[in-house]
Image 1 (cartoon, rainbow, N blue to C red):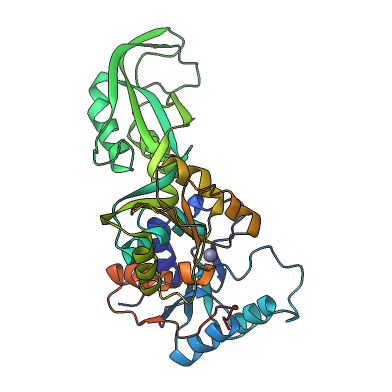
Image 2 (cartoon, rainbow, N blue to C red; image 1 turned 180 degrees about the horizontal axis):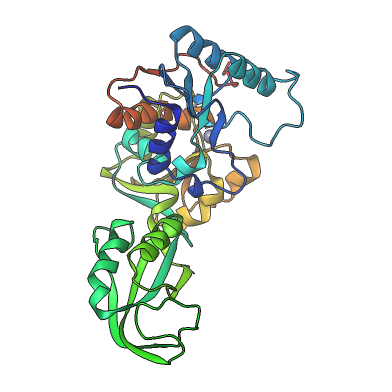
Length: 366
Ligand SMILES: [Zn+2]
């Protein structure tokens, strides 16, 4: 079985939809041709020039990386810095680079779940679920077409709430309309006011499926003109958002926990605020730069918050209410490359998958 880059991208976009990325992000295909056949995939945290060289030597023409090598946009491409050098090398050697960044941070089985698993957390949940990712569709169908339209909506991905599928609300009523002379009415006749027993259907759907669900509605609905309301909702999506919260299977002494953290996450150093003399049971984590989640980590009742890229003054914000740890950006996310291999191997069993051996961390410790 031969797969194209498009096959890999489509699968990854189901796992971590691009619309879940932050507005400043640049996740997606950065170089490469979607129609090329995949010769092998190299998974990495960063796509640097050395990683591109590694892909070439392994015979891989696709790099799946967490961090997008092009982040802010380029106005020229002359090789004047490491970003341009990497991109030029990738393009010259037909290497596709796909970045799966804050969208992978935000899914329940993404970057933060991997960290939680490494630390041994149980009962994990998203720390700050995202709002406004759900929509509501209301439509009106003749009574005899209710089942057909409902199943088309469910088939397209509407009506799923947590562990429940086929969720809808229906109520009977009367629809009215007057077809014009140019109309081709399914019910009633041209020029005459008509009243039709109809069912009002309401369903929830992920906003990213709006087009698909609307197309399914229009296809299944018998009317020439389909009446519907589509509305974005403020509801939280519990499975999508920033950071993760979990429990240790049993409470640990602070020192004991930090020593275990160092081993489990393969750390050289942990920068942390004052220990509070309390056992650690509830843990909040956020891979990469996550200190913006400190207020929510405190409110969640977490005993400790593990993240990276914390500035001096931000450590003060712990205010002896929580222990805050900076474990390093690279160190907090390095296992994302393992996660990528796990995700890809669930679907593609006969493609060569590699973990980069290049240490892309620009920071070393004396
Ligand atoms: Zn990062």
